[in-house]
Length: 444
Image (tube, rainbow, N blue to C red; front, side, top):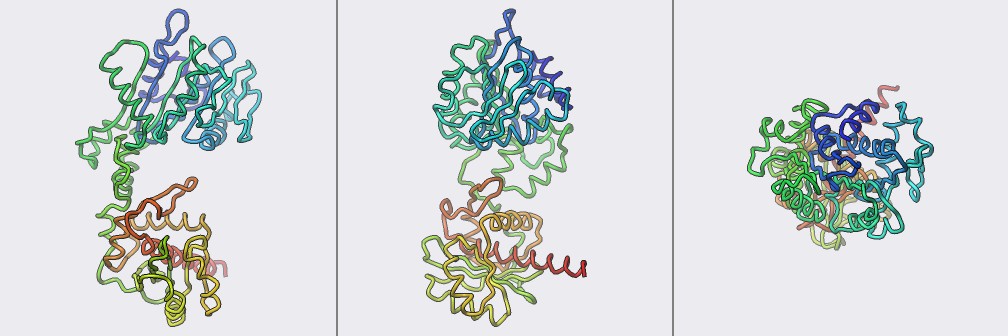
């Protein structure tokens, strides 16, 4: 079926790259009766390699080219991720082509995300629960991005639903994860063993990754493990990622190497590059204020419009906060920036009563601030006065996802992150207000 999968990709306007066609050719092998030789196809490649195009082409070929209605289940990290992937990525790719004429209906609700075809075939999004596939029959199951699975619920949901389907197949795709990626790690072990055994049936396994002892900054290593390099991505893209991403994220995302989960988020070299004993904020100033989760300490950072920052207070407890922050803010005519939903949010009313202008940020705004802070740090656009307290916070920093963005994670950190959060807030507001002022002057 590999050639047919390739023809579908051409109709989508996304001809398969050599690596994708290889997977389709081998994973799509069938015997004289039409039964796949490989009931399970496992693919692990770096990010941005083209898994979506391959997966969608495989789904469509199964839906339209197997002589009868086919039941296809699509799953991702979560049911919501799968819902968005189907509607935001897959459906728009089909809508732009003649293949759209084969679609009879798109289910867009979260409870019924589906793609239905005029021949009776359908693609349904399944939740990532053990019982999601109960009562169903499945001809093709897609398990996408299994690096996120800390158990076997997704696989256990689809395997019973495939049991009575002679020609059923499961396609597992992902980039490498960590030691917590239980399902993926088992698939990798089983796949590598299948390659060694080379039975020609059962499991077809494909992996593009760099050796663990390779030089991760060597473009030759990137070329050897990135099958989309030279097609849809270039060396400059990977080079920028190498210079700006935490090492663990780069190894997983671009070299497809499994890493440990508790690696340092802010690389030591990146942090050292923006720290100096000569930094002294001046001019128009802002204060970032944050409190430890257990309220054991509070941090106050001051920053200017040139993105220079300094930790000016870090003391135990909170009883001193309102008086001291109000004193600094009044002396320097500085705004105070606070995450309105953090422990520091409890001081907002008292600070405003003391005459301080408080900028209260929402969770979404704080997440945006975190992203901007990291990007500016990577590009060396910020300057931070050297401080042991900030050093400890930068070393301990961990992240937690919130939708497509992220926040500093107090729960997973090994030290108090309030100094780093205060730094993030102070620097972000200084930049935003400066940009707004420039735009106002332009329109005047």
